[in-house]
Image (tube, rainbow, N blue to C red; front, side, top):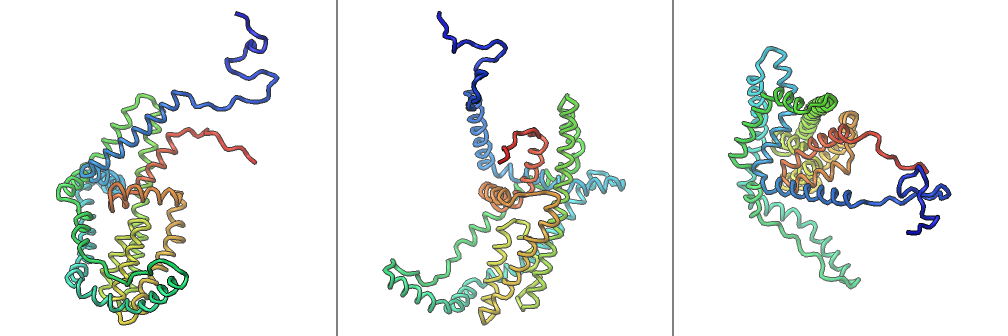
Length: 370
């Protein structure tokens, strides 16, 4: 077979390399194996998400126990260093946390039960207060009619309260999930050292063992610091909210402060929900709209200072969480697992960032400078 001179390979060059006289490089080509790898990874990701969604009753309490156990593990280590057996320390820690949670729930439950029993009466009061917006709505409808718009805004109608029971059922896990969570949490904290050792010794390579040890240490330290820092910040938000509610004359300021501290554990959604609650409670409790909105406006200022100055200053130095990544993680885990998923979104994002830092190569290609 005759070979043209331009088709001959230059000695010492690899197949497909450009000729020495050519300054152009071959364009990057996605090979079939890479495409298949991407497709398989995508299918695996879809399958994992589907399993987590369908088997929520099992995976949610287990993952919640693992994340919470990693957060509380430093406290168990502290007690163990003080000659307290780790199993006993795990039980004491879970009992102490449960007592704090029960205390907060008791503060919140009392006003919630009182207000829920008066929902029809409070709804009528709120509707009467909001009649002040009838004139602006009428002017808006007239303006739309003048410019040839469609039907104006409908008159204000309070939503019905049939959503209360389904919402409570959605927010309240079953007894089986509670039991699975508490048992898994106690066993995880008690056996965390043995689990660490078994996971590290799974690898035969020394470098892999050291990398696994660094990953586990960083996850434990960062999650423990995150829980401690966020808890202190949220307690401060709750105290400030309770003080504002007491100064402005809101009913049950202690319960509203405890509710603000609890909801602040859920990023973005929690403060918005608390603001809406303060608006509704204020409009019902006060005769004027200005007086009813005072506590909500003050709470907005508190959350603005906390979200833009306090939390970034304290947490941002330790864990640089991108705002977009936090929002996407919050949206995904809330869609997948509801309110508990929203609580787990930031810790799981921290774990993901730690795994990315240690598992992905550091010599990744950089963008060319302009």
